[in-house]
Image (cartoon, rainbow, N blue to C red):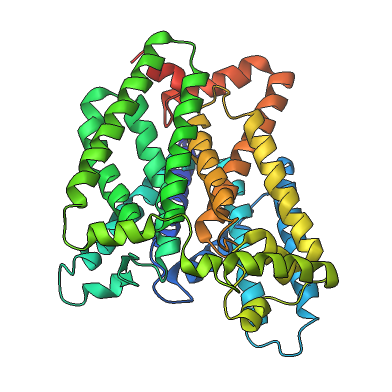
Length: 435
């Protein structure tokens, strides 16, 4: 008996240590995603090792998340088939290796959140911390706040710790939307603490001067507000959402008016605010290349090979659908289209259900919609945060699948588990309505 009494506490301590180490490992991975000045970035190297170690110790892919794995792998098989159409492979094998690696990161995040849903809060917190730091770097670079700060800009636009402001801006949308969610639903005394990082991230999005990021953030914010309004039957909560939305918009408008008074900002804003730029509508501009590329896809069902389109026309496809046809062939295109449609459909069915993980699903879902919309005008197949969004959504899909199975087999246990989760890491919208 004495041996058992000593053994159990030690086992509990070991389990706690393992949980802390695994949580810390995931936190670091998400944090590193905001720093991609050079490639391979620390994120790639770290996540490759983390996924390998986690797989050795029993990484399990939920049955409900298997479509994510199958469709992403099939998409990359399409890319390998497209590679056979190339006379000179150049860096294509490395490009496809990165594509496959990113696919596995999506499956990894779906798997770990499905098994340990408390990781959602940790992931979002790490993302916010990373976004605030890289936003501050981008803002400092834009204003040349210190010697060498210009390394955090490109084309006179804030790029943070990224190589491209058009990736930096969209990267900031999810943490911005999450902070907006907390602002709209959280306790009033906590609002100033949320407003500061939200303003920093919003400033990062603004100074990226990325039209796509501006549009993404606006669309995602509208979708978030609409979903919160529809989800609650409480008149007081709906009134609060409306009032807080008006207050947030007013704060952003005032901040923009102040920012536009700064030297050079107004001119850059007016140049970037046009829906069409010269490189869009030129004779072989972006829109003309769309028509040429889609016609080429009819003649090359296996694609023409990754990155080949850019060598022919001097510019990349700048359209995720055309990108799939050219770089991954019709097999990759159909796989990606199916994955996007499945993700949107399956996520929408569970979007407004009162679950402990629902706030995180909602934020990831509206940000994913924004990213897919932006993909019509830019290539997103190697954006790390897009694969994170996929993983977060499919993790929630797997959790809902498990929850429904548990409800059918043991309703009392399912409801009890839900209450335990709500009392620990999570707070549901229903709780917030009564706060």
